Length: 406
Image (cartoon, rainbow, N blue to C red):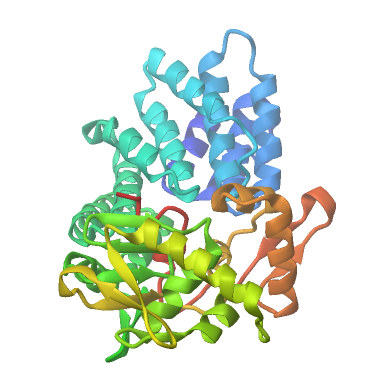
């Protein structure tokens, strides 16, 4: 390695992309191409970064497997920043294995951290937890240790383990300060602010109030019957029933929960669940069928009793009923939450993260665009979607798979 390449590498390690480019900006040999690609990524020119890294990977010879593996890892990090998930995760894991076999433990751990962060973004929390547990934090340099603790903190926050998240964020802050990388310190500071922001709204017969994540955690542990609009679940402590794929049933239980301890008129239930304003006997019959299905599904958690004018919830063991609403309104709250990270998303990446079809996501984006909540850049396959960051509250509970089923 010549002196200019070594100097550029040292500059990039502390986040000084401009100094790195001064050393190798006019060179086209493979190591310089790779370093230029990393520098462009740090300057947020992600398409140019990806192009340079691919050129570098192709330019390295057949006997330079270590250098090629490093390029694969760098390109995977750029793809993650671009919210592009079309590549196979196996390619990244193969590069990690190649790095480990050749003694580059730090970059191998970096590759595995990118895989963990990808899992978190796509809502695969159980997989992320397993992968994160296999990493040896003692082998990580301060920058990677800070990123690992940020991943652990996000996993804990999305699983509503706020004490664990606070401890991980403290460790991440200490590591970021040792690394002395401004962008990393800023990322840690941003994550540390998340637990103090409103995360949801509690709605019951007595009150409506904003809740932080620790207050949501305490509410779940209190034993109350919670109708979770954020996750489309009904839960009572360790018993959870997901209605994410049963929109009619969820709208019925949500309407009943909002009126508890009172009952709800049959006509109101039909209007809310079926979106009808002039019901007839066929709709009333359908309501009885759907209420029967809801009773069977929620039998271990809550009873649904008929009244003279409609139906009402009758919680077991005298539990109170609370409706947990998102911090933002709208049917596409989860989509808005993903876009709120400020990155440009493709429709395919959004569909993968939400577990929905691309066509469904496209229709939702068009509606949000008409409402002025999102905007598109590019055209055809290069089209990406952006939304302004949402200030003042956190969207943690709206991200995919935040609360695993029990």
